[in-house]
Image 1: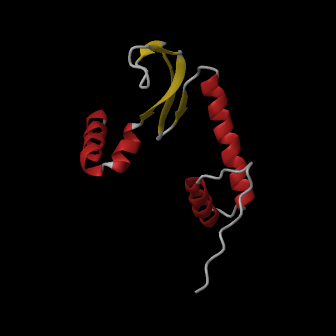
Image 2: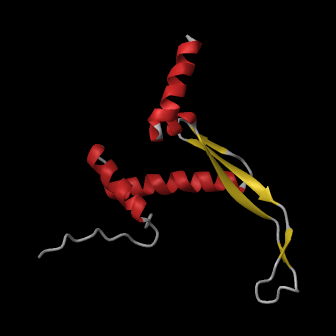
Length: 123
């Protein structure tokens, strides 16, 4: 039995399986080479990362919003020595809030009806 050879992706490229699948779909739909798709994806994700690192939220139309949220320092329990508390430092986490359009695409029976009702009342 012959196996299909998987495309080689160097360490500087998007090596996630999801990114690989995205590249294959996008390359089939649009005539762009995989190397160019990889570069475009890297530039976009780097821009999003830089904005989040600067403390700004990133909103992608019809998809959702990435919001940096500061988690306060707190005292935690040490699992090895329960009598000795450990302090977890302050950190920044990213929160994702999906758009109603994305929710409607994922759950058409629930959110699709709400969107249609909202559009009908707006007209």
